[in-house]
Image 1 (cartoon, helix red, strand yellow):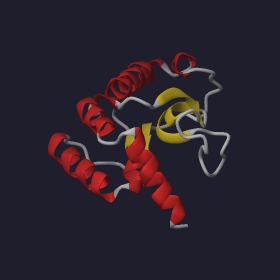
Image 2 (tube, one colour):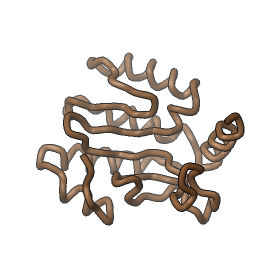
Image 3 (spheres, one colour):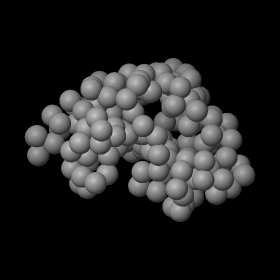
Image 4 (cartoon, helix red, strand yellow):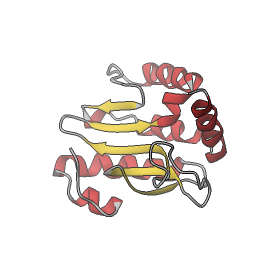
Amino acid sequence: MQYDANSPEDYIKQLPEDRKEPITRLRQTIKESLPDGFEEGINYSMIGFYVPHSVYPYGYHCDNKQPLPFINLASQKHYIALYHMGIYADKTLLQWFKTAYSKQCSYKLDMGKSCIRFKKTDAIPYELIGELCTKMSVDDWINLYEAAIKKK
């Protein structure tokens, strides 16, 4: 679902009541765990954490007016989605996450390329998401991103 929001707070205000607390908690977990240098705002109609143009002036190659996205958080129709571009780009990080998830969570991991879907809000592994957020710095993400787009 898309929300017409101008800020993360505005996005959360528009959510159904049952989604406000888990999205707020995920947002806070991400904010507290991300290394310095990422900024938060609305990105692609979702709550986004990205590398600002002041750090990476080239922006996102698909639309260089957009800052380089890293993590997005969205309330979809049937689930909460956490989009983590680092998992998509780094197979080692992806394997770490899958292994850690299987050890810590009783629900089966529901995941696409960069999207982790949480259908049961009471089963969101906040601590694990926080740990995932610590695994990649802004410089790590830029280097991985640039290496990936050079291959194309």
